[in-house]
Length: 376
Image (cartoon, rainbow, N blue to C red; front, side, top):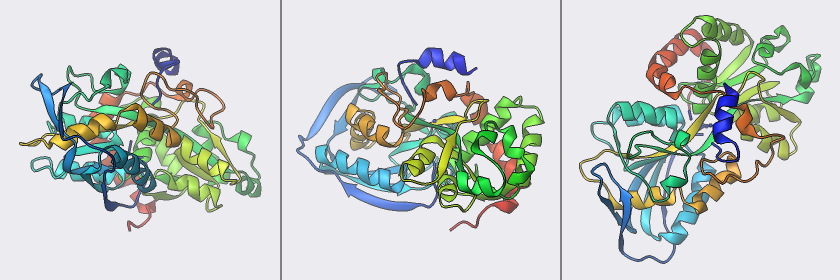
């Protein structure tokens, strides 16, 4: 399966949420900063097949699952080009943002969604909540990483993948070495009882992509995936509401193993934490962070402008700092990785994941939520 995707991707993209991976929500607003013109009419396509009427001034509301610090850094750059667009940001973890968008679908408060799991975008698309729009430069995005509709309803920007972040010092206390953890099956070792932290899939995109991957690898609609998760649950100390938190907890010695995503672990390792980042030999679950325009009676012209910028070369360079796998054809190198991370990605059935998301989350809650951390 992995090879099939890699052949399509090799030398090109990169890609993944629910980074949308983290927990804890916040709201912030930013005003853009740089010279501006007025309004612009570009040839990017809308659902009616015409050109979008854009503006480089105004005020927009953006929902995102990007990390707080990422939002601040990215908006600072956006503001250098568009100082007269005020961006009001609502930031939550993937699961919370998705639930909020679903609840508001008949009266959407957001003008657009930025950096939220493609699997969530597919759910919203199936509900008719997204407005088709092809941002300027969309031809640079590989076909696998955007909506397959004639006019895309969502466009991916980067991807993140399941990884095990293991604290070498804590493992030694358990009589284990990092080399003993290579696969999902190795996480069932009795010595790891109470030593693993994982993200809750109801609130974290990282948690969902990992659970979805396990179910797919074990046979999708069979019981084998749930049988595995039952066994894994015995070794879980806590389920947290953030995709990056398990990596941070492993780095600080609060657990021996954090089931997180690759770059979260690599970042902790680069800071000097005694951790190794292990990608499961069966392949990593992954998801895309994606952007979409919300379907509203009146589309905010500045929303088109933001979505154009959000897949620009400038924006891709910013994303690459946090997620080396981005969705444009010229991906460059993969800093911090020993090999091409594209080779690690499973053949992810996003349609199946989107169709079964609600049932998966409900069953997971019923079985395992007793070990979830309290929501702040």
